[in-house]
Length: 354
Image (cartoon, rainbow, N blue to C red):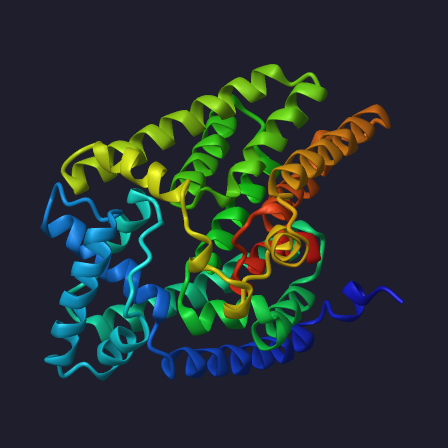
């Protein structure tokens, strides 16, 4: 029985939409009951970086001093959500990119509760668009895509965790869906440039998507699409340079990127122990067996993915049909090899699951 045909009628779409609306409403209620632990940090550090240009938000001194300052402000604020977030996040962990902080600082208002609610709404829209676009790219009917949305927002723990802590994975998933949609339709040099630009922004926002660029580059080379690769690379470099420049202006100096690189390359193990919900395979191997396997996993998984791409090209599979599994594999390499993998990071596994 063809489930797409079974769920192709207007009644099926209406019923699926009603179910999804109920599930999204429940998701909204869940988010409204939380303080926004991660959003609080993006919001606070972003606004601080824009108001005090030249501040090194990645230093230990800043984390301690500003964390105490925020706690003092929150204690005097009538905003109960802000008070709860400050009590939960007593120690700042500033390891996100300057571009991410600059965006949050620029788009947030001085009212934490209102900013959080608007952010939660934006994330719900991102999740909805992401799943529907991915479903259509996979050839699902509209009703089936909506049912996948209902199932994801009500049962997928990666998503539910992202809602509870208000991280950025729903935004990343939406941009990934946009990237895949553009890759499937890029028939011109301008289209390739735009696809690369989307990827460049995605990486500068949060570089755990870097392996997507690596595997797409390998795919283009293996499939003898060097011109396509050149235009995509040009788009990625242009967008990345623009994002880096704008965030440097917001921070008051380009030094912020060097500060971030040093901080991100030296995240202490105490920040993400297994006991707090770090699902990293390499961290599990290190804690239980004393093995440092993160780099081994990274190289091994990248090699396996590259070999799979080569096999696909050898068997004559079109590059268009390879892009979705290539992007999915790029997400999985990070999730399976990184030393820090919170539960909400697994939302990026959704392209592989669907």
